[in-house]
Length: 309
Image (cartoon, rainbow, N blue to C red):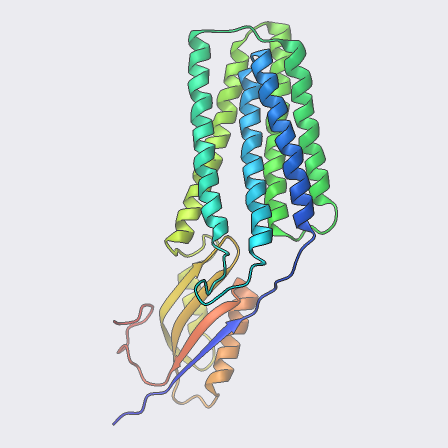
C-alpha cells in the first residue's frame, strides 16, 4: 500500500489597526455633501445643466467617500464563525450599488440634455459662475484635508483621485460659464453636461467590472496567473504545481491556494519549501494570504495547473 503525505499550511499575515484616515474621510464627506446640495440648487436657479451635472458628479464622490469611510469602520469588525473572512466584502457590495447609482445619474443628465436641446432655457451667468467656483474651492479644500497626515491609506488615495477628477469637472463648468457669458451660446452648457455625464458613466462601468471580477473570484488584473505558476514551479525543491487558485475578497486583499508536488530527491523539509514559496509570493506579487498543500505522490497523474477532480 502506498503512503501519501499531505502537509497543509496557511500563511496569514494581517496588518490591521485603526488609521487616522477615518476622521478625515468623514469631514470630507460632509463638506462634499454641502457642495453637492449648493451646486444642485444653484443649477436649478441659474438654469445651468452643467452645474447640475457637476453636482451629480460630486454626489458620486460623496458615495465613493462613504464607501471608503464604511470600509474603515467595517474592516475593524472581527470575523466570526459564520463570516470567517469578516465583513471585508461589504466594500464590494457598496461599490456595486455606487456604480449603479452613477449610471442612473449619467442617464438622467443625458435625458435632460436632450430636453434642453428641444426646449432651450436662459442661463443666469451671475449665479452659475460663483457656484461653480464654490464647487472648485470645496474640491481643492477636500484634497488638502485628505493629504494632511499619512497618505499610505488606499481609501484616502482613491478618494483623492475622485476629488481630483471632480475638481477638473468644476473647472470645465467655470470655463463653460465664461464662454456662455461672452458668446451667448447656451449650447456650450449642454456640451459640458454631456462631457461630465460620460465621465460619470465611464467611472460607473469601471466599478461594475471590478466588482463583478471580485464576486466571480477572478484573478486581479495586476496579476498573471501563468507567471505566478511558473515562478512557484521554479522554486528549489518543487517538481510541479496544480490546483492553483488566485482570487480576492475586496479591492486590496489577494488570496492564493495550490497543491505543490515536491521533488522526491530533494532533502529539504516541506516547511522549508512552504517558507520559500510564501516569501516568493509576498516579495514579487504582494500576496500574503496563502494555503499551500504539499504532496509527495503525484495524485493528479501529471496534470499541471488545475487539479483533477
